Image (cartoon, rainbow, N blue to C red):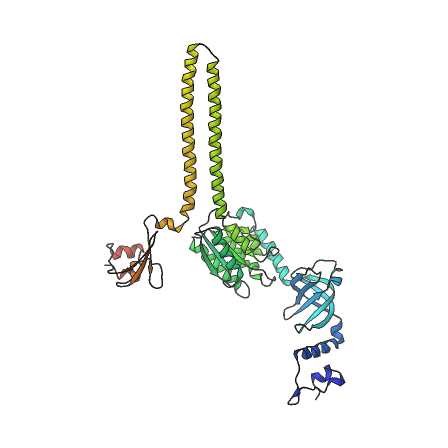
Length: 444
């Protein structure tokens, strides 16, 4: 019975020199060549119109255009070389439905087949793109994009939530930038799927969860770039409404600068990339310090200016006194000069006090952001050993266990001798909800 090889190779090549048990042994190059010869020998595949939706569109710097045509069941890679691309009368876009004329051939380097396109004609709007436009128009009419609903971002956030994939580069970049720009910042990460089935529901649930926590200042919703299919979770209505209903300001950082999703339009702030979102969310610590130093220099300069102006006025007053000879006028001017000196002195002292308070207030705000400032006021942190979990209740530790006590200037390793019961009646703690049933066993 004839095999594929009988139809794919010339008559003179049918006796393969390298065989195993009567079956030809071929190299990868030979197999690829046979497949190429089979496809090239089919006249239908040498000039064919292919209908599909554009995906993974890429305009290369060489002038070539690479993209994928897909439908509900399959996809095929396509390439439109520069010469043919220059004759296009429109610009292809993601999600656009088209008819592409070309030939099917094998790209021998990676053994894949693709469509070498000669012409492209629009064939209406693709399903995903049409869905995007329809949802965008619907939400816009409902007012979800209106600026009056946009919440302002806090100037000095202390706790930020991030909703993204735990394995992508985006989360590492955001945490690195946030930690570098603003020390002492607390970061809460909600790991979710950012593409595929169920991703939109996970993202919406994470937004609601962070709002229930109620302790966050900003939420960053982000992921890296990708095709329109990869980013589609952020175009779902459930995500858009979760962002709109959020009481916490949301920064949308989905894809690259050229990618736009429904989440971008609903969010309180859009960032071109996840890294840009981190820079928007928090100020640069060094810039804040420079601003404070600049304010200090302006205050000092203003004080010096006031002193010089008052001295000028004082010298003018003295010259007026000297120019008048009657003794009574001289005495009056002397008294006036003393009054002016006292007024100037009080005014300068008052201004200096106010400006000093302003400087102290600004420095206290910076110092208050440091966790060490709490320890310096006499508080301590107690950790269980060896797992170093923070102890929040007496019930979490037993006698003879070791604990670590953290002070502002060092640490103590202590052994628990005795656990003393609280004098507050257990019934009061139970009624007020201050202790769980598990904890109440240690109280009368």
